[in-house]
Image (cartoon, rainbow over all chains, first blue to last red; front, side, top):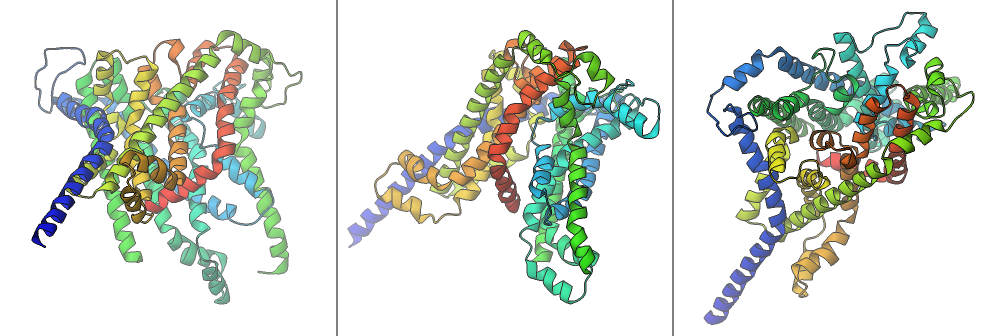
Length: 307
Length: 276
């Protein structure tokens, strides 16, 4: 009896050990990815940020927080930081405000519904870099530019230099970002809308609720989980933006539409200032992590109040 | 609601939304219509239909730009980049549910940390690493960069793997099937829907990516199609129709992909978002 229990236990332990070993074997490739592509380079970034490493020099010395001080004193880098924040917040707010009504409209029955859904959705599928370049032609400052032609025929106005004036250029970049992103997020809202129980609306109609009351009392609360997800995706994508401003304006005029990512690349790789680029990268990571944590906390809180 | 509004509502909605979609699609129309014009006509009437459609721009593009090469490059990078990512991610997901203990818990939280670290935060050291081993300006170097996406694949797949009854995996093991065989014959077929979603999303990312090619690729032979389009702005400074033509050629696979995969993209959107 004792010996059989013993054998059983031994067997079990052996089984567990082999299971751990196989599990470890399956996890080996991703651990390699983690070490080579995340842990080591991220540690290096943090380290470089405290040094005067150019990217090539072998003589590296510790400089404390000097790089951070330099970043916050550099107007070009600060403009990059400011525009990145502006872009992230503006696209998040505008896309959310446009996508919800669009999704509600696309959820109704009407002729051509599938075509309209596909058109808006498709705009989010091509590379933002390509769309950015195409919009550069549309915003052409020439009289013959697409937008200038439209403006002239509608209002008889003179050619507008869309991308040469700081705030106008910022507005244009954000506009294209909203244009490309709204369909994607409307599709996301649509998926949630289709899951809202119909009888909620029927009940409200019996109670004599009008369309607006139904929206506020039923649709909006039902969409809250989706709003959390959608704004989370928009904020993180907005902070990471690079392709669109780079291809549309190259970060100009001046540094008006410069982004953090562009600054990291320019400093850290093109200009041999790996130290400054790394300090920027650390600031960037902190910003992204702060947004992720804030959104997670918000989502948890909402989940608790709703359930 | 009165009857008249009930009948008129859908018509107004239809007209309104079709108009809105048409306005939103003007840039797409502009790209396509411009390819059949001469440079002069394109600047004289940017939005009009071509009066005498010409295919000169297409001839120009194929004569001067290595379009086919760029497509081949993009296809290679996407196939290997996404393929290896998905294999690494799904192997890890299976390893994770195979045995739950302190070891897997640690690995799980490490991967969570990796998930939060943005690509920008590791770009400079990774560039130096690739420069050191001669991977900068190679397609293999790009593939290596995209392997970071395996962490995202892992998270999507492991969430899905926890759903089916775990006895299924258990039973396969007791039947004497080795872990690799179980992974291949039992686990992968079980998680096929999420694999499709992951492949579709990662393909969109890698195919469309501009950040890594722009940073890592310098020779024209190694350009991906997006980078090729970007470089064409300088190449066709006066020949705008040729630029638009290259754009159309670059977008054709994306349109085909969209038509075939729209269903999966929408499903992935809904599924991925439910989990948050």
